[in-house]
Length: 329
Ligand code: HEM
Image (cartoon, rainbow, N blue to C red):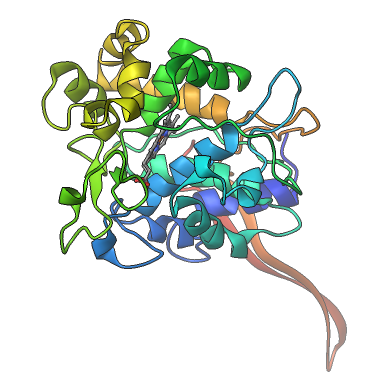
């Protein structure tokens, strides 16, 4: 049972729940509203922060070694941004946005996890809820290498996912779930996307994975299977066969997993929620995660206990606010 105060729980719950209005921790939500918004720079760059956060979490997670009990969501990505497997501005953009929220209770790794929950929630309607736990511990150095790249052959890619605890079906599902938001950019991946993608309003040359770049939906799967719209995006369709990593992954089981995901939006969402929750909960075995953070119905806010003196003597003054939930969760 929750007992107030619980600093880790209270602070993560605050960032998760108080998204607008009084006492809001809304910097996260504001940074990705609308979902196409790019908080770190010019809107004509063709970048979107919500997608960058999701990709950052994947690159942090991907080098987990579950058998050894190392890596996973530990913010080691912060030490690894100069590696070829971590090309792109997503990582430094995201980590510099999260940095002011790190404190003795909330780690960078928890904020990376929180950012996935918020970005998928904001980019969906009805809002998708991924369960969030806290208690991740930040790494003090880089971990092993092993994030799949567009050029990586299928067996190596599957081995990398397997080391992180995800089998072939999971790997296909997790990638399709990730690639329903965002772009592949000419700026970071000229070998995938050609210079023709660059326009005055898209100077980074971003090409969408699906026709609804800012909506967390099954369309990436449906367009891939039907061969219409964005046809699964540049990692399926690139002229450069070597970098068709999504095509190699999706076809590695003869599209069986993709066919299954295309069943319905509800099915896609429930698969993605479960895969993302597993990704976020993949932590070094020295880490103990908290219970799932559930919005509190009653929460003390900015509570102070003071001793004041007036003409009648000394008094104890207990002041502050109580946040009351408008609906039962
Ligand atoms: C074989 C596995 C994967 C490969 C080779 C891969 C590769 C890539 C590449 C090359 C980009 C373009 C980045 C840019 O131009 O800025 C990208 C974007 C992205 N990836 Fe993946 N990815 C893989 C799996 C995943 C997974 C599992 C997730 C999430 C769980 C994910 C989430 C994203 C997101 C959200 C973007 C868009 C980023 C943006 O718009 O800034 N990817 N991926």
